[in-house]
Length: 224
Image (cartoon, rainbow, N blue to C red):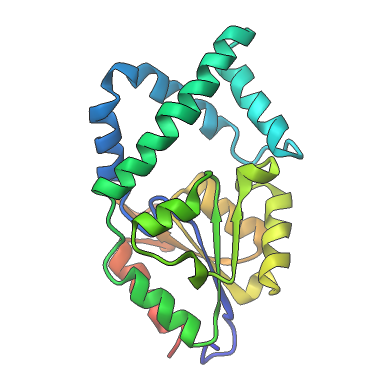
């Protein structure tokens, strides 16, 4: 348990948080260049669904497809592209170009050995496959949640409630680690958690954000 008695759990995002996703994105772009307009549109639609609760995975999937195309034929083409091209390409990119940030596995093991509960909350299917591709054992996490499988994405209040229940801790006893202000930082606020932001570049928007070495130091300090 944390030496100050305050923090008893840490919840992590995955993509961009436990690894630098920029090389992965470049790998995908170079191999899907003809599909660049599709990639851009899909990313825009997904971002626009952040925090919206559709109650179940099927409703979220239908809304996503409806925003991508107005007719059944177009939606079916998008469905096949996502399942058969985009998602496999992302996993392949993580396998080929993805590298966990330095010391990630060590920090996870130290936090767990120190008595802290670990959680993983990702918006995207295949989170455990991407963890394995990075050399991270999914079993290190006491609780894991893929939000789109439940019909909503961060920072939806229902996903926050599910996370608090799954972690078995009040928000004020936990830290959220993420890389997106509109999703992860707001999710931390919804849960009542502290937030450590992984800054991939540029100036930090507020003191909660720092490059990964700073985040790793903050996490290590929870055990002192």
